[in-house]
View: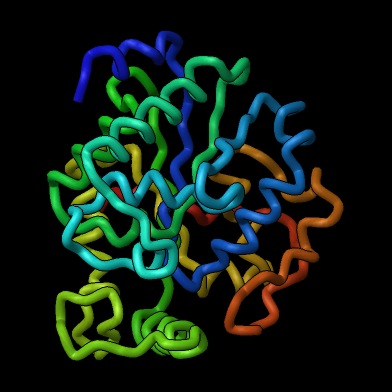
Length: 259
């Protein structure tokens, strides 16, 4: 990890890192952000533009994850994840941050919720140039049984993709799956970025209250969904569950004090 990459980011920014989890409205969030980039810029927010997919910044989690671990994107895109890939991603990300004229920058990749080791978080910090910025981690979690069932259906919808009996696999969705171990996931990010950096949104509560994940997500950014007239139309949930509709924001998103 070279000094040249680290020196790129010179002015301190506020980085908002949406890490999923899967099946919690990530696609809705990503399409909304992309479609409203002009309005976001008017509010001093920039949106990183992905190199592999424009809406989902998967190169950030791929460059952070241990090379031998499997993931949905690794299977789909067949990308060679080596040291050069990590360096190229770090250069791209930090150059974007350094050259953005805006104080706040949003990154989104639900694959970041697959990280489970300290060295992976260290690589993520390196890619972001985390020491030079203020970072908010946005984690969205839902009831574990429903989460695993929804994820199982999504896995099986893709041709030539199958469930695994290997407990370490990303395709293992039995009740004891590590994918639903949100406590460990929270601890990992708290250890890596600090307790005050992590905001946890309860997906089930958000849908019950608003019918949509966007109001609570925008609240973490300090924005009001009422300022975006079409926020309620983003029903991109892959399972087909209707998650649209808008409502007045009430304050329930909390900084984690304990779990």
